[in-house]
Image (tube, rainbow, N blue to C red; front, side, top):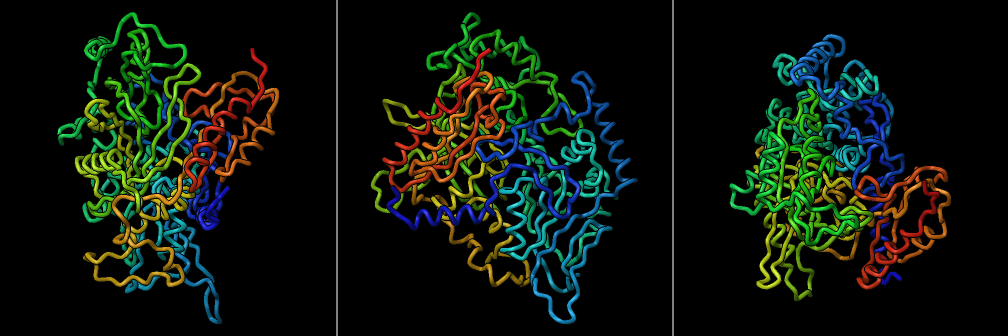
Length: 608
């Protein structure tokens, strides 16, 4: 059992700090009141709604076009939509002002809600009083974008300007048949007059200190909007396609002198086959039936731009490669509001090793690790890589430890250099790498998987608050809204006194964090396929009773007998999750092993 009650209390406080939100339902900010509630499926996090398609993964639907439609036609269609919207519903800043004093005294006026500009004010700010502000793009998730908005208001007394990317705007308009959200879209960045009109509606009392984009599909718009508003380079990184294109990303990192996988962008399947042969792929190799690929030559086939594991194929023979190439080529580019199509396909060497994920926050080029994660992926159900656990590990040695964290430090140094190569100087990045250690020499090789200029798409805050003492999103707020000794601004901002204890001091945060407990997210793997005939609640009771289990959740669609269930082959087909934490490593590892073993007994099914 727990040896440290204080640690348990810290964990509980961590959940409370996340507003006790266990749901992945997309919720609208008050100033974007008309957004349809959608379900967001994200990797390894909490999901209290049905696992439907991610709004960021419906490019072919949101296009409003068939796969054979010419991209230029869709570009013209998007321009037509922008012109139509500009006439019917001009884009205006959707501002949430902080409540600085919620006690009404005699003579005080009630808060003013300005419906004409979709703006919520407690009162009109004095022109000589500056209010810090952040722009939040596609801020849907309760424990990502919505947490940032709430914390910015409550902890920093800052205003938040909500905007929607072109992709999300068009999705809600064409697929969900919504219109009331249109005023909260970004202005047409190709139309200087529209941008100037949008900016003219921003009160002069606002000092915009940063721009945060929650969605993958909005990243390009976020880059362009920041430049259009003049935030670059003061608190913005400008536009760089290599932060979104996986081929260009690896190319830039390689030119900076860092190790990367061998790769080639191929326009034809013949070109892809030729390069695959150079990587050792056999034409007559059979596909593994058990998922074990330890001795099989493999290549990775993926789109230049994507999210999670969408359309990422691990191919063991030429037949599989040709099928993967055909699926990706001419398919819609992820997150493209104009329905651009993939004209080439990325072929990469498959890197064997241990995969790590690193969450890094940057403030004007100063980089600090928020969390370091180690993936536990195993062959299962005929798939080579099924997520079993995402474990939080220390990036630096804890006090009293004699062993040097050589792998962890090598990973963090590599990631810092990769971010420098991509000119990422502001905000939060989630970076994935593969690490291989030479069994003879002991040398460590780190190679890039990808850089994502957004948060780790899981509900990480409870674990990192308890195990590390803080979290990446609070670091983002400190980077953008916190005090800086080197600030060029002459304004003295009036931070709320009552929340001073909640504000992180950027200067006091370590570059590499340690951990004070062991923590992990356990992914629930289905071992059966068919119609659910029985839900074994006694198994879930055994899981919950394990000392290390702090919270757990089974996705609702698997809690109704008669529903279909499939064997887990990727992160999108798992059945739930558990947050585990313990300061006793032996008990921690024992509970993880027991959780994984019990997953085999969660469901009975009728096959066929």
